[in-house]
Length: 191
Image (cartoon, rainbow, N blue to C red; front, side, top):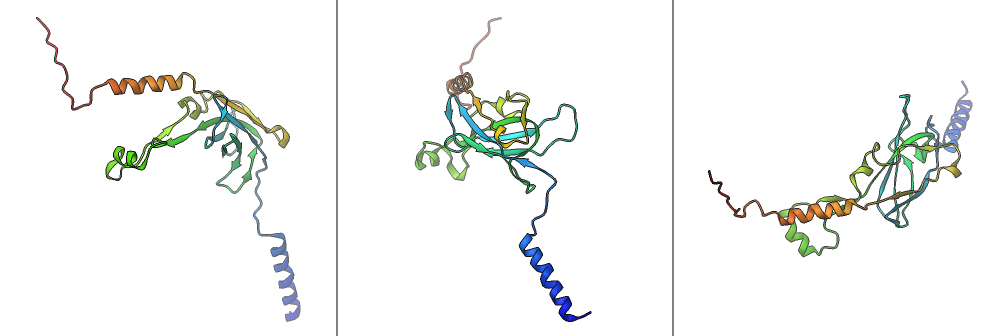
């Protein structure tokens, strides 16, 4: 074979690869999904929004998609980990929400050091009722992503009413209990 011909062929093939890209194709079509999450009527930053595939017929399910709210409570989904990209596949989803923060918010460094001596780590605290973490109890069991990006806007209203009161009551009860090393009253029974 002519060296000039081989060289020309190699240049053409290399050019095609470079200019068309080496991006692998994916069999998954994703569609842009966005929306807003309000908690007790206000936007909340840092809420993890997860769309979990749901197929009551038991057929093959889609891949999960997730996003995080910004300061305005807005989120955009990505189907990550597989390189699929921004959006979610068409289909039915159950939606879950989580909003963790450290229990040191609003504390000075001195208060943190006192509460967590010897290098112990702060505890992550869930700021939403537990029902929102479970797809079967979140209250958003049937959300459908369609092939039209203008219709894939999902806004959610979450409520902490009742849960905050219960958590506050539980914390109050814990404060009223004597510590484990405190002397306890002894009661005698008369027989």
